[in-house]
Length: 459
Image (cartoon, rainbow, N blue to C red):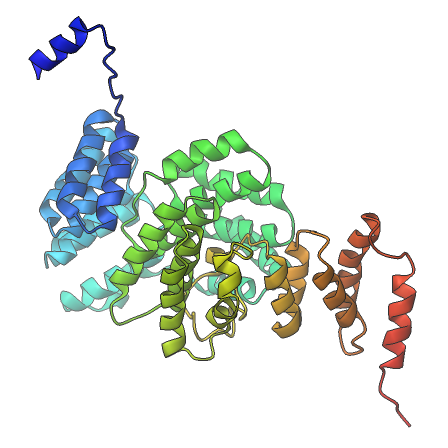
């Protein structure tokens, strides 16, 4: 090797040195995970720690892969190192340690770590999971869960607010969540949900303020980081988006729910390869309990990676078990357009409302928020969605001067049974054609006459 280098120098040729950093090794690790090469992934995560020893995210990723490989003791040692020196404020490490102890059947140690987490982070992002884990530990330790005050979580009002949000009652959800926050200002999940409700009302800046409050108290709050980067994109904060994305791309959550949130966020922001890797990992972890929406997300990522055949297999899998699922059926109908690049599926596109969907029962509304439907998706929603879904689709529609959309809106406008709210929203969208000078100014009068002529005759 030295002789070769010396000969190169004698010949006068330049030696190009490679500048490796922690991010390089992280990307290699994720690629190895995608191929199920866990030993290689472990080595790359260890290298990332070597290159950036003061970055707690690198250490957490290392702890995560060790736990994934069944080395729970090694994982806990890494987590202990974080708490002892790298970042003592990262108290969620206690929750991760509790998971590892539970996997080793060391239930008393798991309980100790879990109680420590609850003491240090009473309003943390793993509050619900901690309550569920405590219930399981109580059963293993043959105790009554009612004796432990740490499991008494403030859920009744919060659950009611979540139901309002899931049902699309965004204004009512906002008021309910604001009341909860007034009593419990440190309840991070309530602020996250409030940000979502505000977003759907078009109050982007107010939503961003709520997320900032969360991250001021917990800089590594995953849902907060994901929501913030999406809001930054909507506000046109390009440089801030890049900075946040660098953080998110180097995080590998322990919990499946958080991995799903991260994967959908990465997908929405164009990191389709990494999103696809995580969706496939989630599918593999599901075993007998399937969340079919994750199959759709994986199919969406596959389409963005020019893997339409793989997407087709994933949608077919959904339809095999859920023959009435409209989302995969819709995209299967338009598969040729997808292959030609004329249509690209959306990560958040829902044909069924969250409150009535049976195909995707346990996916939170925030996993498919922020969607801007394409014209084909909007057409399908106008034809098959309920009024609430139609309103949401119209509110998020990005004007593209599409004649099919225009004709569909005209047809909807003349339907006598639609509500005034929906009629007003349809007119608002149609006015965009007038503003673009592609629509005659008298179209409202024409459509009003058509509507009158279609009214039923009442004796």
